[in-house]
Amino acid sequence: MRRQRLILKLAERSQEIIVHDVYAHGQEEFLDGIDPSTHTPLHIRLDAITEIIDPAGNKSYIPLQC
Figure 1: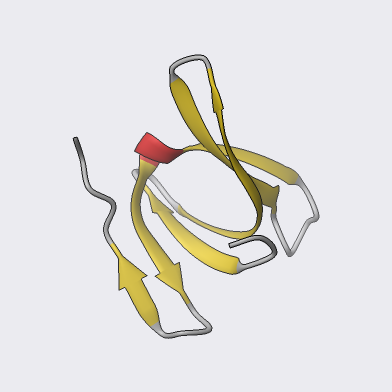
Figure 2 (figure 1 turned 90 degrees about the horizontal axis):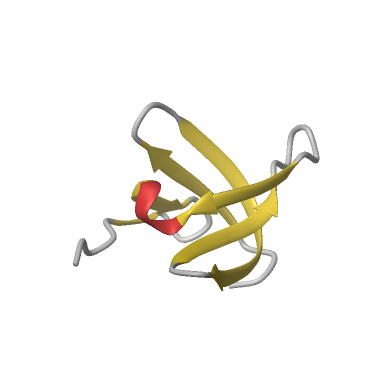
């Protein structure tokens, strides 16, 4: 998954990201990467993601809510 370009659908917006890592901090899990257009670091909580789109494979995933 590292260095993979994804489009994340969040509650209020869409965010393109180049993924670097997935990690946990305390009881929260995050997706770590950069915005490819601005090179800004991104740290997005996994539970904030409503849909993951893989433009390279033309696939879409909806995370399970537990």
